[in-house]
Length: 209
Image (cartoon, rainbow, N blue to C red):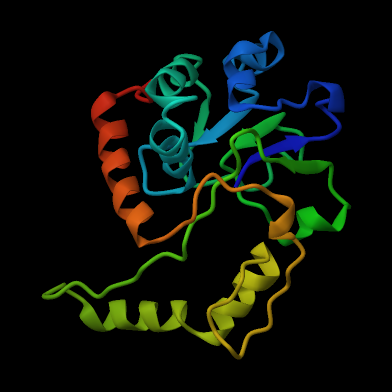
């Protein structure tokens, strides 16, 4: 996940190079203040908090909490659970933390992904569990069973170009990961640290506007 940009609305010479450009370049500051740039709400367990973790913790020396506070101070438009095509449709100039869909890599839509310095971020597949003593455990088991099914894995590959965990589902690597620099490796250690960053974001109330 990086910065998804509408190529019809944003000329190449205005593409930001670093996350700092988002808060220091008057062009981007104006767009963010006018709610033309969105960010996946970092107060929920989603890609937005992964960006906060990478900048606040992994790259604390060059970005850290000062960047997070400055970015939050511009009050970017927050989307609760990713975007559903607003950038490609021109409803937004750009979005930080938006998903990269398979159709975006086909060159038929006016959208490109930028990995700003120090890089993009990536998430692991979500974890599923059946809560002990839940009121409807069988319904939960049916849901988890579907999420682990071949049908669901094929939908994720076709719709999002995700790499499948199932050996019987062929990948569709339209989005070449070698083209994009990552801030950190998404592993269990990072996931635990991201949980702590999520708590910090919520407690800080920086994005409560």
